[in-house]
Amino acid sequence: MKVIMYHYVQRYNVKYPNFRFLDFNNFKKQLDYFEHMNGFVKKDEWLNFVNNGVLPKKNGKVILTFDDGLKVHYDYVFPELKKRNLFAFFFIPTFPYTKKKILDVHRIHLLCGAFSGKELIHKLLKLIDESMIPDIKIKAFRNQTYTNQNNEEGVVHFKRLLNYYIDYKYRTKIIDELCSSFKNKIFVEDFYMNSHNIKEIFDHGNFIGSHSVDHPVMSKLNKRQQLRQIKSSFDYLSSCNVIDIKTYCHPYGGFHSFNTTTINLLKKESVNYSFNVESREIVGADYKKNMHSLPRFDCNLFKFGKAS
Image (cartoon, rainbow, N blue to C red; front, side):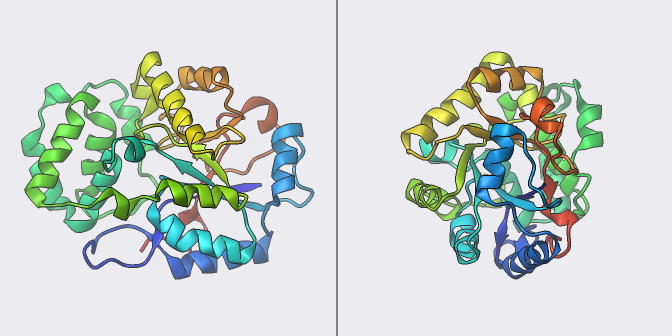
């Protein structure tokens, strides 16, 4: 089985000329391509795997996953899935619903979409100093992040500094200052699905899972902080009546982004299975060994999946 990961599936927005997204027309072409090549996993086939370890008889069938609870998933993706009679996973960070604020990771995306990498990194380097950047894991984060992206000059450095390197106790304030300086403002209701949208998607046979509270790099957090990210997110989703099976998706993804503490907490909280980012298919051995790091491919590794 191939599990495919998507984020922004949408149309071009003139306000964000540098924004990286999968054009909706290309998304539809990619679904046609997957259908032609191997087809899609049926829901009962997926349940047979997670409950019994039995893979579909036909190799290479596809499952779709969508991260971050974005409004474009409701506007573009969900109607297309209904039209094609496909199910998918939607992983929701709960901070935008409980705090009514845009996640820091998405404010970073929006800044990169609206302004040049050179402008952004120039301003950022004036706001930070070495005391804000612990050196633990910097080498690993440098070698294992943004390897499949083709960004303009300055963007990768800007994103690594804010998403991975900087101590979280400084990050939100720094991003506040950047957004104020660049006069970048967007409202929560314009960016994320609302709780009614999520419930509608769930009621149509899709899986809703946790994507933590506010999308941190979990390996940077201590045990107490990680437990809050997992438990609080599921508490909110359960209150929305959109959880029948507890499933989770590691924020950012990649083995650098979580650790054994994360896995142990997911098991303790009775989470059934979790998704990682790793460019390989799910195989039979994953049922016994890797149910909390199930592999997913980025959509941009396949035909029609390149970001616009």
